[in-house]
Length: 112
Image (cartoon, rainbow, N blue to C red; front, side):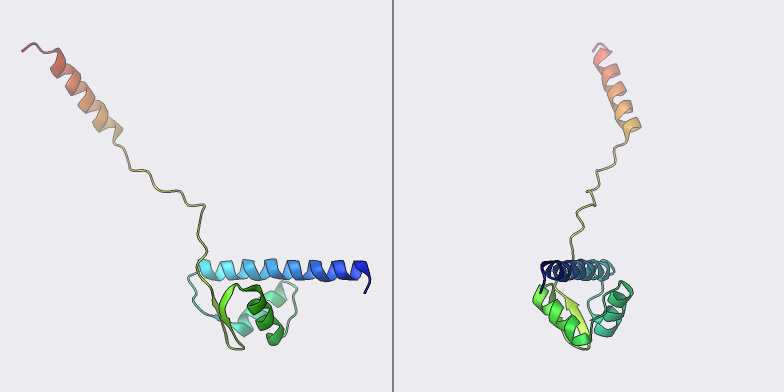
């Protein structure tokens, strides 16, 4: 095999791995616990990756990104954490704080 053939072969599998991870991430984002193998294969085919069911199952198992994969279904390993969501800050009632501060200042100014 020539060097450029090896490079193309490796690039193809890198792209395939990226497409598989993207599609699994989309399924995990939809809270799907099980994916039809045939449906997943067709989605990858629409991305340009024509694989048989056996090739797909072997690729998924070799990648280690699924709990199980067979000719009927694919079970992803787990949910992908959404790191882009920032924790909500507690709401602050600025008007209430300003009012409390004003009342406190007035009370401090009143002679006793």
